[in-house]
Length: 140
Image (cartoon, rainbow, N blue to C red; front, side):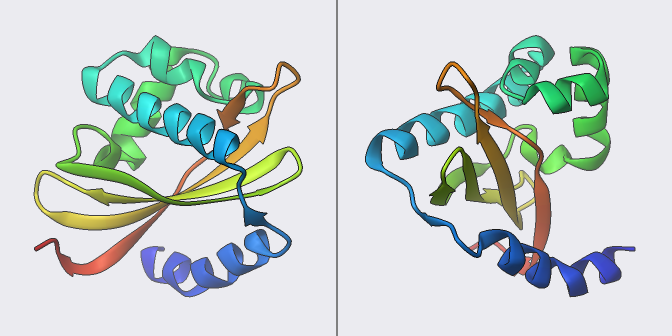
C-alpha cells in the first residue's frame, strides 16, 4: 500500500497544485498559525482543540475529538510530538490553499506533510486533511 501511494503521490500533488499561487502575507500567517496550532494541540493531547482546526467536512467524518485523535494516533503519529515541525510552503487559489510542512519525528524520521485548507465563511482557514510522504533517510 505504501509503495502504491508513493508512486501516485507526486502526480496527485502536482494535479492538486495546478492553479495555486503563493499566498498573500496575511493568509500565510493565518494558515501557518492554524497548522502549527493543531500540531501543538495534538502533541499536548488536546483532542478538542486539534479537532477545532478541522473543516466541518472532517469533523462530520470523524464525529468527535476522541475519534479524530484516535485516527491521528493510528495514521499520523509523526504529527504528535515531532522533534521539528516547520511549514515550508503555502499556496492559495481563491478560498482553497495547500501547505507543505517538514516533519522530523522523535526517531529522526523525516516526512513531508501536505495540508489542503479551505477558507470558511467567517474568513478563517480550516484544515481539510493531511497527506504524509515519508522521505528517505533520517534527519541530520
